[in-house]
Image (cartoon, rainbow, N blue to C red; front, top):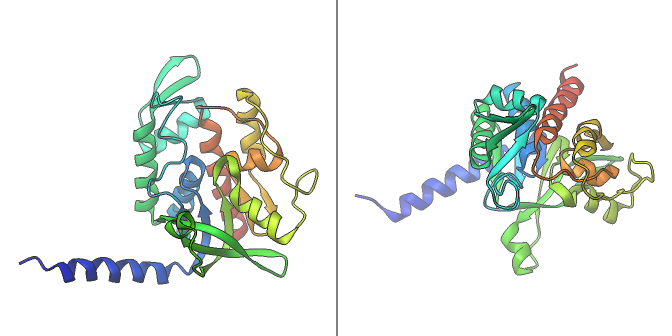
Amino acid sequence: MIEEKKISEAIIRTYSERLVDRLENDVLIAGSGPSGMVAAYYLARHGLKVTILEKKLSIGGGIWGGGMMFNYIVVQKEGKEILDEVGIPSKEIFPDYFVADSVLVATTLASKAILAGAVILNGIFLEDVILKEGRVSGAVINWSAVEVAGLHVDPLAIHSKFTVDATGHDAEVVKVLQEKSKVKLKTPSGKMEGERSMWADKAENFVAANTKEVFPGLIVAGMAANATFGGPRMGPIFGGMFLSGKRVAEMILKELRG
């Protein structure tokens, strides 16, 4: 006999236990796009406690739509190596231009990250950061539905040793830190430089090179790195995004593990 009460209790109890467990993290990642999920996979695989906050119900960021809703993405050789590692097939169309099914990429990266030990909390957005003694030390979170409805509901807070802004073009974490706390960022102007117009080749190199700590405790990845440091957009080529996520993991592992 199926009892509705037990269905509800099973969900509430399990989720509540997981949420309490995730009040303290090694790494908190805002955004479950390509760079965020790749970072989570590599970090969790090395035993770090990683939580991804995703404001939407769906994961994947900009992967799903491919290019203009043609649901394929392009990667170059370096990006393909990461796809190969996680078992995502790709096809070479031109020399060093590989295409992959965008839906398969999104679902596989999410699966690999979760199976490695990362947790994705979807429907939750980062409203603010915890800023203590000049360092980002966690996130202030709330339900996305609260934001959409415009309700006045106080948030909760979770701690982390590092926070990663992988929120894409808007660089939402950097933006809220800059606007609310008036801090000086590690950029040429001390502020967000803003994303530039498309130049795919330059953007692909720029995103990995500028995946770095922009403020103590806060690392930018993917298109958030380009928006923060003034790089161009690149469209539906994703190798640089994958490499950015891997670079995040390498930086944090070096810092925490030596």
